[in-house]
Image 1 (cartoon, helix red, strand yellow):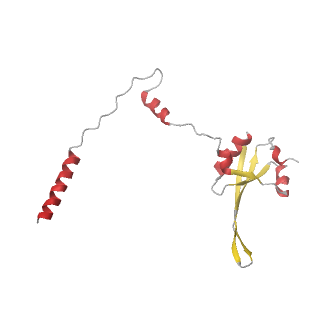
Image 2 (tube, rainbow, N blue to C red):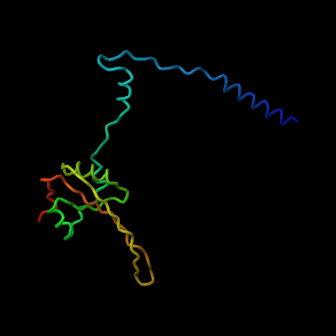
Image 3 (tube, one colour):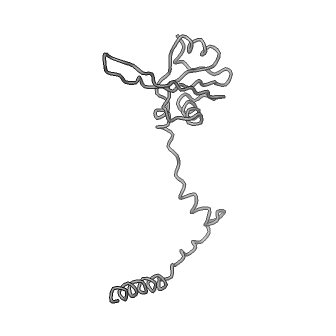
Length: 146
């Protein structure tokens, strides 16, 4: 019975320490700045500006230059090889930041990995993801012009 007594005393001590927690002090309110409440000032200090410089290199891998791509470039559509994890919003923001153009729409297609063999060894060719980007009328990218 001595074991049960020890467990009871440990539980009762833990319950006492939980109930005897020191009161949490609330932070004192700072005086309001002219024209801005103190609460709004603390929220704006927490928000960090997002760095957009690495966005394009993270999502846009390279322009995908093909015969079809150059034909589409005349109509305002541009083809890019993109990261597998990139979505339409990421691609749109990356193109707008990198080339300083207005993107109207983005279409994405994914090619599946293909099985390849070299002798008895078999493996897979890596799948790719491509993005068709439609620019606003009158805007062009110089990377596709010949």
